[in-house]
Length: 283
Length: 351
Ligand SMILES: Nc1ncnc2c1ncn2[C@@H]1O[C@H](COP(=O)(O)OP(=O)(O)OP(=O)(O)O)[C@@H](O)[C@H]1O
Ligand SMILES: [Mg+2]
Image (cartoon, rainbow over all chains, first blue to last red; front, top):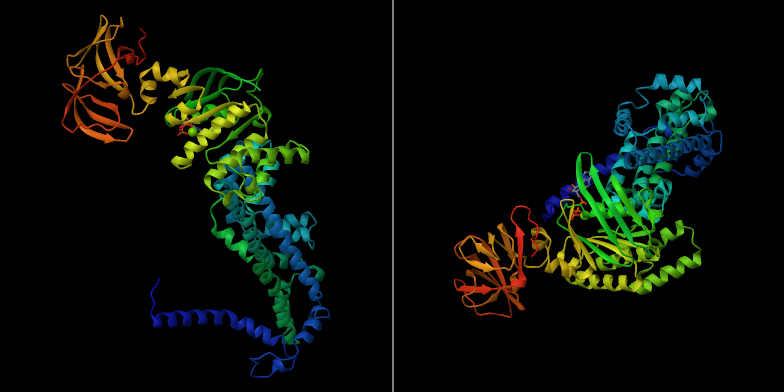
């Protein structure tokens, strides 16, 4: 598209601006809501411009008791739980799928393709589908209300294994052969050659998986009954219920805002690698 | 330093046998070129010596050690691949040092060897670059450097020059040759380019369909090719083959011409004569009508059909000649330049 007609340019910009506005408006309202006093949020019309209470609200939400009259953990704790869960899921998934892809691509063992397809089939079995048996297993292992219980059942990943398999297949065989001549054993080859060569793909996957982990809802809701273990995404929903009694919208909006920060941070920090990892094919 | 001995070596993939009973002894310090058309098993043979491919039967010896079951790293070899296989994420220095680090050499020793190799190959100023920041020729040198630093018993090259442009190829060919002589390391070099093979090798192994057609010096291969395949493969443009019947020291071509060969052979034969050995001579036995001329500057190639047959022949004359398309020319060749091959077995008939 190298057309150069002003009308088209204006039209396409209008469409883009409209799209951005549709995405940004709710975020803006959340931000505005988080910067007013609680009383102001109950009057109509709701404010469209930020107030001056942002830092007061931030302090109260983050370090204070948070929402009055509810029995949820302090917000910093919920964020910590979410962060730990997201990191464990992202790192766990990456580690496991790197190793399984390594095994499938570089080792000859009986039923190799059989194992590959078994892993692949788990694509059809996300937690939501197997939630009851998985809950049963986790409960029997005594992992309810623990970080392990939160993360381990989510760690196996067919998508990531498949992706790393594709990445490894693009690495020329000669790379392995020259490493063999150099005297590198399998694990050495894995660490010194494969991991650095998959660096950008690992980064791209990390972004996706971190957000996947951060946004987990159903599973944490099910297996954490302890308030100290609850994650921020789950808590937002609980707060909406609490809002029926004491509608402190400024605090709720602030929590929602805080819940958005880590994923945004991860995306921005990894942006360059992320794009490289998804686009570059050359090894 | 060590020689290499291949002892009735065979290789099969499932039911298909790709190498048949390869026997060869390579002297210490010798430069052997394996040459043959695509798919004849050159790389497979080289990779069996390297230990990258398992041996189906037979033995590979390096020095006096049987290495069939040794890992590549334990065979004391170094290999240069066609695509160089440099580690893209490591600097040139690290690429060369990687194998030494694994062997746990001291830092000082690694530095010494890397710098020495860099000096030999004149890549000193690139040591801190990544392979992707180098030209093809420079990468080629780095790949060589990686082989040299290891100070191996044997160098193995798998078509290392085929990704370079023609001029660089000639230059690197000479450099590899000089380097090998200087270091005196036994080397096996795989190529499908017969000019490369002739200029590089102390001896050439011509492979065809998994069989060794001939193993000898370039001159032997040129002067006494053991089969039609070798005769056609070595030399450019390739040898002319004329079918005929041998009887009592002469060959009668299919157009009735008789040519004295001095051979006692009889029966169906192919008479081989190289284009550069055909000399214009009035009343010469090889008569042809020129169909096409190629002026290459140093030589002129005359293409045509042998009169009275439909056999294509080529003659190569020195300098620029004033022949025209359509001219009839006669050629003769010295008796010692005539090669006789059995029409059935395609093997050379010895006088
Ligand atoms: N892994 C394999 N499985 C089955 N057949 C194979 C395998 N590797 C090679 N071959 C066959 O072995 C034969 C020899 O292959 P090789 O790679 O040695 O040829 P080459 O002489 O090096 O050819 P080129 O000049 O094209 O590199 C080929 O016919 C090829 O199809
Ligand atoms: Mg090959």
